[in-house]
Image (tube, rainbow, N blue to C red; front, top):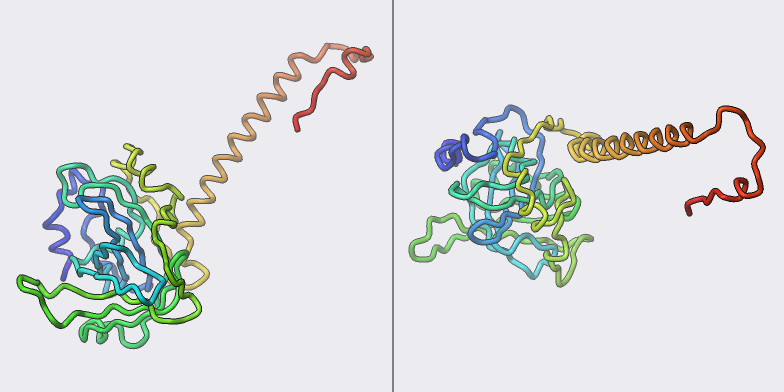
Length: 259
């Protein structure tokens, strides 16, 4: 699949999704986006060959090896889709709310292109929610009317296995910490566009985009705190008498400290 299909399905004058663009280089990142469209599902994406290879997983990924999740391969997405979170307006393809449910890096357990071609892609994930060894296995037997896009996403047994894994317990964005309901209620997300630069490869930089987001939030809080402190200091100065006065018994005990 190529980005032509991605481009064909979208009107970029109406949707905030990033335009189709093939990237150079490869940073081996992955992202899982929770997508509440006509039906709720999860989009599992692996960065390779300058695009995000993508699968729609109706029930979402699992850390329980007993859960063999159906994964329908869909059109490739541009790498800039990696941190897309917000609202796709009604009337557009995939209309609904999108959450960056998990993100991180991935390591192929062999030649990635060859394994993908053979339909048995083995890899290791290092995300905030998903960790350890997985496999995407192409289903050879086709149902009547099938397009041959059915795969299975399977968790291998390792130290990160969680029996009885419940994906609903992790309904928050690793990017903004918002829930799906909070994203759906934020109409400003309909005009959201990524202004963050994609981080370069390497373990020390793989979470730069998240660190930048947190740093901006902390800076905003710090600025608000300084503004509040300055306002209180100004108010206290205005109330202070022109000459130093000896405190009376009433004034000396009249200041109550906040706990």
